[in-house]
Amino acid sequence: MTSEVIIDVQPKEISIALLEDKQLVEYQNEPQAVSYSVGNIYAAKVKKLMPGLNACFVDVGYEKVAFLHYLDLGNQFSSFEKYLKQVQSDKKNLYPIQKATRQPDLPKEGSVQTTLKVGQELLVQVVKEPISTKGPRLTCELSFAGRYIVLIPFGDKVNVSTKIKRSEERSRLKQLIQSIKPKNFGVIVRTVAEGKRAAELDAEMKILLKRWEDTIAKVQTTTERPIMVFEEESRAVALLRDLFNPTYDGIHINDEAIFHQVKEYVGIIAPEKQEIVKQYTGNVPIFDNFGVTKQLKSGFGRTVNYKHGAYLIIEHTEAMHVVDVNSGTRVKKENGQEANALETNLGAADELARQLRLRDMGGIIVVDFVDMNLAEDRQMLYERMCKNMQKDRARHNILPLSKFGLMQITRQRVRPAMDVNVEEECPTCFGTGKIKSSILFTDQLESKINRLVNKIGVRKFYLHVHPYVAAFINQGIVSLKRKWQMKYGFGVRVIPSQKLGFLQYEFYDEKRQFIDMKEEIETKTTKTKGNK
Image 1 (cartoon, rainbow, N blue to C red):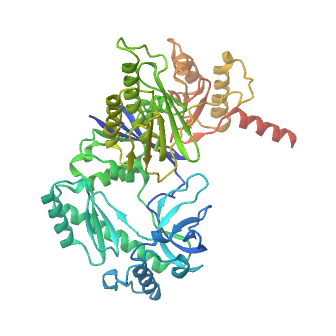
Image 2 (cartoon, rainbow, N blue to C red; image 1 turned 90 degrees about the vertical axis):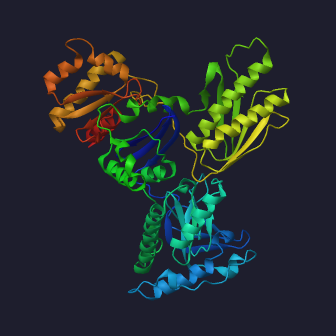
Image 3 (cartoon, rainbow, N blue to C red; image 1 turned 135 degrees about the vertical axis):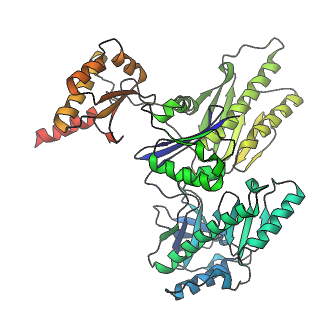
């Protein structure tokens, strides 16, 4: 199986796609301005106690207050609380955590009222992003995740991933970590640490320890609250940390800064694979070049087609996701409806496992498969779904089909489900239902080019249009593009872009910065000037 990571960096957002055998299996998209994510650590204050919930609300500087349950304070909350006071009492010398004295564990049956008070300062970490009407979920059990290990301040245990089965390897890793970990730290050994040498684990331990020291130093020197004292690595690097596999064939990035970040990170964790990180410099949009755009258009939306005319209908409600499996236009098998239902359901299980990863769907998922009469067929479907979900990194649980033919799945939810709008707004009427004559579209484009070159003064630019329109502009010996270049200069370049609608267009300058030339904006500007 070949695996590739494609990273598309735009001025306003960054998108990351994971391809397995050229098929899109994971996709993440985030605005560039948003730094609020799972793993960030904040020095914040308690805003309100909620005795009935045995929880409190914490102000971390977000529009919705964050939620912290008493049980998420952690066993070592008392040790953290005392150490935080010691750190803030001396602004010149940082009190080392190795000298801190451990306090008794927080009782599990305790109350938030007797433990916290309004205005109290806490060190908290985001474990779940805001979803729908809910604010972020917090914990006081801090952790610093690396590729091989997770470092836990004031932890006292070394735990090895249960996915490492060999007892001698588990014992080796446990003894190794015990010998190199600093005092007053706990460690979780991740699955990918299996077979790794002491030098590799020790190097990562030092990196994570430095992150903790930088975090607590920022708490000591700053008085502003709330303030972010530790930011999780960039989305591109964080995704690679969890996903990276030595069998990757390529990591392609269209941005120089992110390219260097990722290459440096891969050089640390797998120096021999550093050459697979490549900067994409082609004119065609990177997602179009690797076939991602078309898969995004077909993979999202309410209806998802798969083998031989069958399809899934995916609905999202506040409480759960509901999936309906339909055989559609499938032709029945010679041996009857039961075989047809089984094949439809097995195909649905394959596609659904991909959709769960692709959309990052979490919470409760209820799937209504096509009814099957044979118990062995239902068992085969359950086993197929379990096998498909083995590649999923999120924690999940799958129940066998109920007597109503429903399968229930729970999947870890730490951020809102990914949703890509595959419907396109008409770029010429903006939803009004009336457009200019389409035969005049190229005339409209030329007027934009004329305005861009002769009035605004931009002589080198890229015009992105739908591939069909690009083919029309480029057709013939003396093509329309060649005429434009002869009239407005050879800085006019036409690029086909699959993400655009049929009569949609976008202008970019030579530095790939977007130039807003939309008709609607120009019309409003003209009216405003006329009124003046």
